[in-house]
Length: 518
Image (cartoon, rainbow, N blue to C red; front, side):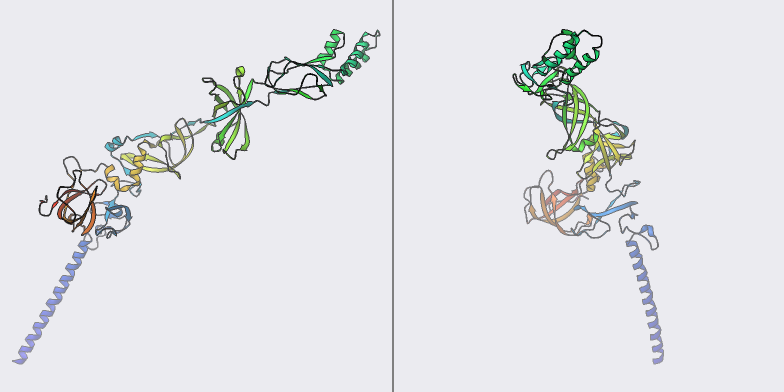
């Protein structure tokens, strides 16, 4: 009997052991199945795995994950999922647009036609053209130093009479300037006249020698001819102006003795003048010799003086950092006087290349950017290298191709949206359609503080967003807070997310007074 009981006990123990192992194996298999289901599918199916890093495709949406972020701190990006370091909540993935070939370009933004119209977005095509810029500068008038003449004494003499007595007096060509008495001419002229009156057939050599002695004492051919014609001594000479202009230097006075080679008058013409234009150092490369110039003076409104660049002086002013361009201007009627200020417009060198409207450029200080308009309402910033500018067009040396389109109006708003990726949803026109209110999320909280534009709540978990309990700020509804709510009070509340991803209260009432909508 005892042996039979012992055998029955062994059999029962084996059955229990086999059953326990089977239950353990079944539980392990179910646990593995649940674990596999938690990550998105059955084991061995790679496509069903949840995204673990930026660039993976989320099987639930079919879109590529650009990054993860905390909606409360949208500017901070993470390259893998996890819990937010700022709030007690899970990070939210941000997806690329489906079918977007440039989904990896996080600076790209898509703008719906309706929003483009609201922003006043205009575009222009990148074209190949010719630029003929003008350099604007200020200048001052000076004498043309290449239009000067000197009047000198050619022999020792005395100034008997002056016809011009002050500097800057105007004179015409051939006008008398002074009368000189030259004693040295008397002897040479008397010798010449004596030889001419002699009666002989071989006096030609003597006459020619006497004529040469008159030249040696400083007489010119015109004065010698006058002696021959008059047949008497001409001891006085009248000095005349070789050119028309003004007397800029007067060294003669009546009664003074002059020596051979002494300068008595210096004349400067006024038919042309110089305009010394101050060109900024940064624009010096645009200048070229012989370029056409137009000048205007405030003293002569409506009058345009034309000329050309005569020289570019090899000197930069250390104080103004300008280069001086010497411009020769025609001066009809001697209207321009030295010292006058003029504004000059110089035609610079002509360039051919790609051009865009100057208003399309965004200057950041370190780089130049244009907003490139692509198909389907997509925009993205492009760095460009620019050249010269003329007539509202700017040369593009690198960064664009002919036929592309750039934004010329509203580009600062589009660029702002491309830089602040958190607001892309609003730009894409994904705001709730009329009649479809935004999704509301409900919870219970305690009011910690009330400000002018926000209220601080310590709330419990928010199941609809998988948020844990935390203390955070909410935007006050446009209609304001209801009467009676105050810090320290327990409330029921509802909120929704605005287009910028910030929570805004839609309802808040003392606890028990709110009926949550399904």
